[in-house]
Image (cartoon, rainbow, N blue to C red; front, side, top):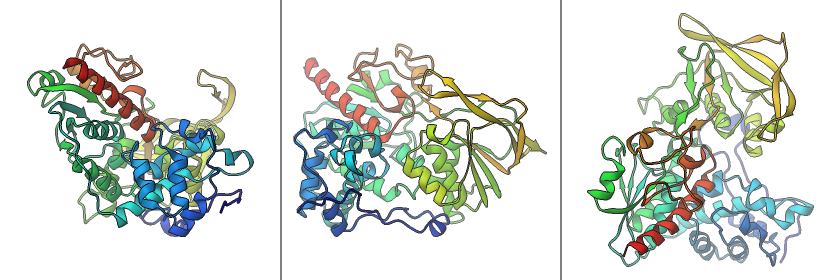
Amino acid sequence: MANLNPEKTQMPVQNPDERNKNFDEVATGYTEEMATDEAQRCLNCKHKPCISGCPVNVNIPSFIKEVGQGNFKRAYEIINDTNSLPAVCGRVCPQESQCEKYCVRAIKGESVGIGRLERFVADWYMKNIEPKPQKPEPNGIKMAIIGSGPAGLACAGDLAKLGYDVTIFEAFHVAGGVLMYGIPQFRLPKEIVIKEIESLEHLGVKIELNAVVGKMISIEQLMEEESFKAVFIATGAGLPSFMGIPGENLCGVYSANEFLTRINLMKAYKFPEFDTRIKVGQRVAVVGGGNVAMDAARCAKRLGAKEVYIIYRRSEAEMPARLEEIHHAKQEGIIFRVLTNPVRIVGEHNFVTGIECVQMELGKMDESGRRRPTVIEGSEFILDMDTVIIAIGQSPNPLIKATTPDLHTYGWGGIITDDSGRTSKPGVFAGGDAVTGAATVILAMGAGKVAAAAMDEYAKRLK
């Protein structure tokens, strides 16, 4: 029976005053009854506009129909046909600007909770079904993936399903890339990521850890000495950007990349169980307005900071972070100082004591389509701070470019490719943040899938 409720079935969450003191997952997920009820809000539209909004083209109406009928296993199989990481995507994808944006139900109410249903299906499957993947017939052709983030994992999964002998080379001591080091436990439990990766290993994907391509081995060596027919570069954008203002070298200043890596990958939040302590003071400023800034601010609060500020030079309406993340941050007590821009980090005896800022106002539109912030003269002021976290973006690591001179890149470091992921070097493909700069998990996965199809075509032409 159709559910005509104009609003989504609410997702249960932890109480804000409790969750801002722990790293347990904020949203606790749908029950079977909730999922079935929400699935019955789907109209199963003839033109299926939600599919066109999904970067990996999940057959959304079909899987939701199965959920509505209680066929959760079949729903998972439909999602998994095109999406190798459904439990991840159900948690961190910006569905509101992708599949749910095109949902017909959103015309006169809220869209169907596509992301919430995807998460439910993936979690239900992990809990109730023992995976028994059927390895495809091997074709004996070796493919290399550099990086085990979302782009690399998606590419590896598709190639493995086609019978290729796939090896992922990961620089860190665990696989998962940004899913492991960048996104906090309370948004994306690491156990979920590990299970998703294990499902790829069941397909035959091999993962070489502590393998820094460009230092230990070059791309040329992979192809010429190790007999890999093609290589996919999925090294992400892990090189932090700074503002270039005085005081950024003081003790107590972190890049968001370092701050989150030490917390998420090295489990600093479990000190002293894990000997990776990270110190925050009573007052913390996070500079930036994206999801990474929200993650850093919410982590700082959980580590014991009394006051945590988001400092952003535009208005809240221009913030690139997901509305849900902004909402959760406010609920947890994060203080927002918008139309505010740092000009200097103040210190004493080499330690942070404050951050000097100026007030901004929005002027004319810039090339990004947003109103350009301009300084209000004479508006300088200082906020007392113990810790400052810079979260204004990342760029691709230059190591691959430096060791592969015939690989063409943009001036800012991104690898130049065509629409299929082909680079200037024959047999070498690239995708995800290494090409676009920092973007979303699902867009990186979409790039990995496109590259896998192109690599398959390339390998067939070599036969």
